[in-house]
Image (cartoon, rainbow, N blue to C red):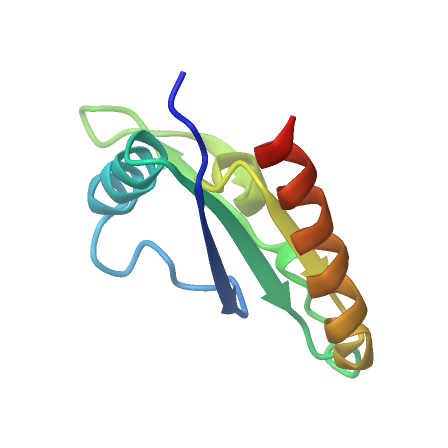
Length: 108
């Protein structure tokens, strides 16, 4: 396998990541993984907001455009490693813990 010698941390609210198209995002995720990047997607949520990214549901369509059903947004989230952070005060501890785990992975 490819050595994961680089760490990419994306900090976002996690919404609208497919704005430029699902395939483009998936290709970018695969390409970064193949080039030795470990991607961590850090979703920062507002604790005062009642709508969590975990509550988002989206339609699933067949290749012919027929509605096949509804699924949870996170079920098709293209990033394998993600953290949902509800308290921004925990950001430093969360990032340092993620960095420690990445170093353990790289040095293993």
